[in-house]
Length: 328
Image (tube, rainbow, N blue to C red):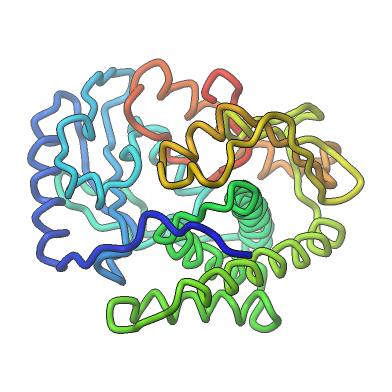
């Protein structure tokens, strides 16, 4: 299938990334009640990689500062989404329920414990849950992009790196999805030195989406994906997720003709306003392990805290599907 490819990667030097981080840290360090600022992840592919910062605040303090509102277009290209913001007490808890990696202290006091997991079985349970959640969210995103016939190219390559981690969490080291993921990562690592035809990119996206669907159809039957309650979930405004016998989706709404895809992001945003996608898949609501119950409560607490105290920061949670409706 042919797609309109938008948001193509732009060559950016590593030095520009470092300057953007330095300017952001200077702004954040001037805000009251900031305890520490971390960078997570890495800039493995300048021009494609984005920047993720975590800002830790004193407990029960509010911050109305929006760190992205005064950024230049070049800085917004690097800081794709809002920064993570978290109070000190929830930052400590977040280390138990997520696998954000490569923490680098940029400013303030070191708050992380050096102690590793004491229960490999619990770590395995958590990794499987998180991997399935992110793969389902990736599947949803690809369904929307295929339906609209518009693919955000840089975003697709960013998420391919996340899929690599998800497959490692699931101990998957072979198979069609694994091979396609590594092919996308190979493109990503050498993107600015290659001449890849758009038709080749579109073909790979179709194959990737199909193999991801095939993989999930089996995975959600063989492994348990837990949710806290038997209800409809809303991971985004145009997305609904509910329990079902198998992986499936249906769409309601009105599709704008693809000719208007020239509008790029505005076209996608308008499509999202005019359409609603309801996904279903087997979900386990009973006999939820204590570790996951505690994680679900942490996710809810983090969302509610940020909505009240840190409205311009993302909560430090690794849960792309489970979020309170008030936070949607």
